[in-house]
Image 1 (cartoon, rainbow, N blue to C red):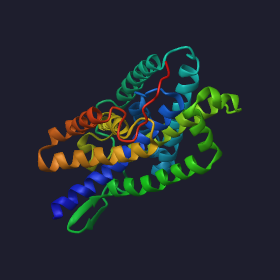
Image 2 (cartoon, helix red, strand yellow; image 1 turned 90 degrees about the vertical axis):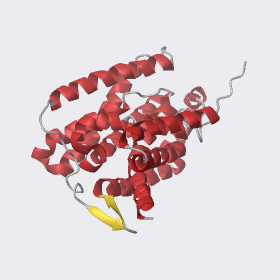
Image 3 (cartoon, rainbow, N blue to C red; image 1 turned 135 degrees about the vertical axis):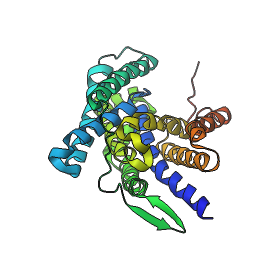
Length: 293
């Protein structure tokens, strides 16, 4: 019984991290119809800013700067690169984000060097809480609490605020939204800012010993990429699906690690994604676009 509870706690905690990443992934896709393959690098960039500023500003000041910097980088990518390629197809823009990802990943890795692995979970790194004979690690517990607050706030804003209304209108029909006076660039820039901020928040929990192991921040980019199957699982057009997909990925990874082995856990999430896509090509909650010919 305690083993099963442990699997649930681990899976839910990691699922909360993946949900934060996948939600940013989906918000960007809904506003631009571009798959952002640089999402892992946005997270890594935010984490590097936290690591670099921590000795000067302390953890909380550095964490705030890291989140703001990742959001600003997201807006910069959207305004400088994507907005100036208006005639490019979405597939070309997705490939463009792969190039951005490689550049950022290479530069941050170079700056981190081969010194001791950087960790970012100072306030909760060593926290452990017992529950029904199992233990939840501090990073996973705080990730779960943070995800509940942030994701809950997002859905309230998405449903009831003017920003949420403009986001939903643009995702339904960009041309019609523009004719109604909605400024598309504001919607897309805010989506990239939100995606970058959520990625930077997620990295604060990934670059910890319980989640990333001994590699710390240097393994964060690979781990963050698991948010991609989470977003695909839930459906790229569904914010709620991103949350569900994150939890499914977290539980699949935790179950595979406990009942099979850690190596299989790394591919289990992709196997689950393949099975779901065979049954539902648009994901669990995604919409199938109807094209009139």
